Length: 153
Image (cartoon, rainbow, N blue to C red; front, side, top):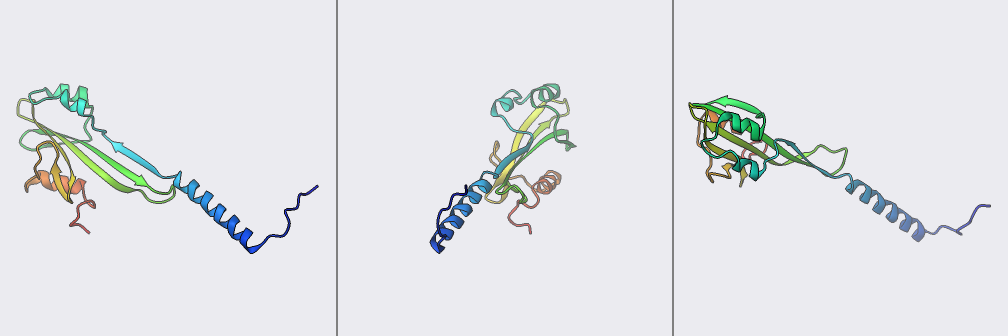
Protein backbone atom coordinates (compact mmCIF):
# COMPACT_ATOMS: atom_id res chain seq x y z
CA UNK A 1 0.00 0.00 0.00
CA UNK A 2 1.58 3.34 -1.05
CA UNK A 3 2.29 5.88 1.63
CA UNK A 4 0.98 9.36 0.96
CA UNK A 5 2.82 12.33 2.40
CA UNK A 6 0.10 14.73 1.52
CA UNK A 7 0.19 17.61 -0.90
CA UNK A 8 3.57 18.94 -2.02
CA UNK A 9 3.90 22.65 -1.37
CA UNK A 10 6.23 25.15 -3.02
CA UNK A 11 8.19 25.38 0.23
CA UNK A 12 8.48 21.57 0.31
CA UNK A 13 9.77 21.47 -3.26
CA UNK A 14 12.28 24.22 -2.51
CA UNK A 15 13.50 22.35 0.57
CA UNK A 16 13.85 19.14 -1.44
CA UNK A 17 15.77 20.97 -4.20
CA UNK A 18 18.06 22.57 -1.62
CA UNK A 19 18.70 19.19 -0.01
CA UNK A 20 19.43 17.59 -3.41
CA UNK A 21 21.78 20.45 -4.32
CA UNK A 22 23.56 20.12 -0.98
CA UNK A 23 24.02 16.35 -1.43
CA UNK A 24 25.31 16.86 -4.98
CA UNK A 25 27.80 19.48 -3.72
CA UNK A 26 29.06 17.12 -1.04
CA UNK A 27 29.40 14.32 -3.59
CA UNK A 28 31.34 16.55 -6.01
CA UNK A 29 33.54 17.95 -3.25
CA UNK A 30 34.44 14.39 -2.37
CA UNK A 31 35.78 14.01 -5.90
CA UNK A 32 38.48 16.67 -5.36
CA UNK A 33 41.93 15.18 -5.50
CA UNK A 34 45.54 16.19 -5.13
CA UNK A 35 48.18 14.14 -6.95
CA UNK A 36 51.95 14.07 -6.83
CA UNK A 37 53.74 12.90 -9.95
CA UNK A 38 57.40 12.24 -10.56
CA UNK A 39 60.10 12.22 -7.91
CA UNK A 40 58.78 12.94 -4.41
CA UNK A 41 61.53 14.70 -2.46
CA UNK A 42 62.49 13.44 0.97
CA UNK A 43 64.79 15.57 3.14
CA UNK A 44 66.37 12.45 4.62
CA UNK A 45 67.27 11.13 1.16
CA UNK A 46 69.02 14.39 0.27
CA UNK A 47 71.02 14.15 3.48
CA UNK A 48 72.28 10.73 2.35
CA UNK A 49 73.97 12.28 -0.70
CA UNK A 50 76.23 15.05 0.64
CA UNK A 51 78.77 16.91 -1.48
CA UNK A 52 81.51 14.45 -2.48
CA UNK A 53 79.20 11.42 -2.81
CA UNK A 54 79.73 9.19 -5.81
CA UNK A 55 77.39 9.10 -8.78
CA UNK A 56 76.58 5.48 -7.94
CA UNK A 57 75.56 6.44 -4.40
CA UNK A 58 73.20 9.07 -5.80
CA UNK A 59 71.56 6.46 -8.03
CA UNK A 60 71.16 4.05 -5.11
CA UNK A 61 69.64 6.65 -2.78
CA UNK A 62 67.59 8.82 -5.16
CA UNK A 63 67.00 6.35 -7.99
CA UNK A 64 67.02 6.95 -11.72
CA UNK A 65 66.73 10.67 -12.58
CA UNK A 66 63.86 12.06 -14.63
CA UNK A 67 66.41 13.39 -17.11
CA UNK A 68 70.13 14.16 -17.33
CA UNK A 69 72.26 16.86 -18.91
CA UNK A 70 75.90 17.61 -19.49
CA UNK A 71 76.85 21.13 -18.38
CA UNK A 72 80.55 21.28 -17.43
CA UNK A 73 80.05 17.84 -15.91
CA UNK A 74 76.91 15.76 -15.59
CA UNK A 75 73.64 16.86 -13.95
CA UNK A 76 70.81 14.61 -12.76
CA UNK A 77 67.35 16.22 -12.66
CA UNK A 78 64.56 14.77 -10.51
CA UNK A 79 61.28 16.44 -11.51
CA UNK A 80 58.05 16.40 -9.50
CA UNK A 81 54.69 18.06 -9.86
CA UNK A 82 51.70 18.48 -7.55
CA UNK A 83 48.32 18.94 -9.21
CA UNK A 84 44.87 19.57 -7.81
CA UNK A 85 41.56 18.78 -9.43
CA UNK A 86 38.53 20.30 -7.72
CA UNK A 87 36.02 18.05 -9.54
CA UNK A 88 36.69 14.65 -11.07
CA UNK A 89 35.85 15.63 -14.63
CA UNK A 90 37.73 18.98 -14.62
CA UNK A 91 41.31 19.46 -15.81
CA UNK A 92 43.85 19.51 -12.99
CA UNK A 93 45.83 22.65 -12.18
CA UNK A 94 49.49 22.58 -11.19
CA UNK A 95 49.91 23.83 -7.63
CA UNK A 96 53.63 23.11 -7.17
CA UNK A 97 56.53 21.90 -9.27
CA UNK A 98 60.06 21.11 -8.15
CA UNK A 99 63.29 20.14 -9.88
CA UNK A 100 66.06 18.67 -7.73
CA UNK A 101 69.35 19.03 -9.61
CA UNK A 102 72.41 17.04 -8.57
CA UNK A 103 75.61 18.42 -10.13
CA UNK A 104 78.66 16.23 -10.59
CA UNK A 105 82.26 17.26 -11.15
CA UNK A 106 84.63 15.68 -13.70
CA UNK A 107 85.37 12.84 -11.22
CA UNK A 108 81.67 11.91 -11.02
CA UNK A 109 81.35 13.21 -7.44
CA UNK A 110 78.51 15.42 -6.17
CA UNK A 111 79.59 19.04 -6.53
CA UNK A 112 76.34 20.62 -5.30
CA UNK A 113 72.59 20.00 -5.02
CA UNK A 114 69.83 22.47 -5.89
CA UNK A 115 66.07 22.28 -5.29
CA UNK A 116 64.41 24.56 -7.85
CA UNK A 117 60.85 25.76 -7.56
CA UNK A 118 58.89 28.96 -7.88
CA UNK A 119 58.98 31.74 -5.31
CA UNK A 120 57.10 34.95 -6.02
CA UNK A 121 56.66 33.84 -9.63
CA UNK A 122 60.40 33.41 -10.25
CA UNK A 123 62.72 30.41 -10.41
CA UNK A 124 64.37 29.91 -7.03
CA UNK A 125 66.83 27.42 -5.51
CA UNK A 126 65.41 26.53 -2.09
CA UNK A 127 68.72 25.00 -0.94
CA UNK A 128 71.14 27.69 -2.10
CA UNK A 129 68.46 30.40 -1.71
CA UNK A 130 69.34 32.04 -5.04
CA UNK A 131 67.74 32.54 -8.44
CA UNK A 132 69.58 30.85 -11.33
CA UNK A 133 71.46 33.11 -13.73
CA UNK A 134 71.11 33.21 -17.52
CA UNK A 135 72.52 30.33 -19.52
CA UNK A 136 71.72 26.84 -20.73
CA UNK A 137 70.51 25.59 -17.38
CA UNK A 138 68.15 28.51 -16.83
CA UNK A 139 66.68 27.91 -20.30
CA UNK A 140 66.12 24.24 -19.42
CA UNK A 141 64.49 25.12 -16.08
CA UNK A 142 62.26 27.75 -17.69
CA UNK A 143 61.13 25.10 -20.17
CA UNK A 144 60.26 22.70 -17.31
CA UNK A 145 58.38 25.43 -15.43
CA UNK A 146 56.68 26.83 -18.57
CA UNK A 147 53.17 28.01 -17.84
CA UNK A 148 53.85 28.45 -14.13
CA UNK A 149 56.09 31.50 -14.48
CA UNK A 150 54.14 34.68 -13.89
CA UNK A 151 55.59 36.51 -16.89
CA UNK A 152 54.50 33.85 -19.42
CA UNK A 153 51.16 33.85 -21.18
